[in-house]
Length: 139
Image (cartoon, rainbow, N blue to C red; front, side):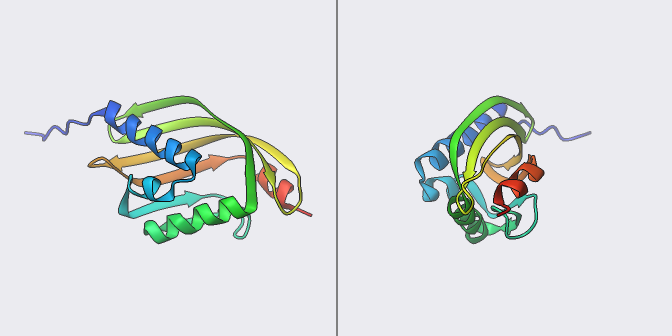
């Protein structure tokens, strides 16, 4: 007999909404409280551009957010849609931001692909227009 895993998709969506709320307030502790101790964030792009890299654990996530804050300032960020199935939540966002070193603005749709286990975020895969980001960071 196959074991049936019951996942509350609504509570997983709530975790993600609380994460975005905490990030919007700049409350890193509240954001980290929603992630597992061994969380992994994967952000595409060349190393040194924005928060590009693979970040592990709370220290890694804290560092990725530091790099993001130091590298760019969001002018607007909007959640377009959220889809949940089982332990996965996919969020479509649209962001307009400015690279602080160059003053150049870039815009991109972003897809965040989350995996949640036992009420905590264990992975975030980030997908966006890396070419637009690299161009904005280029002097």
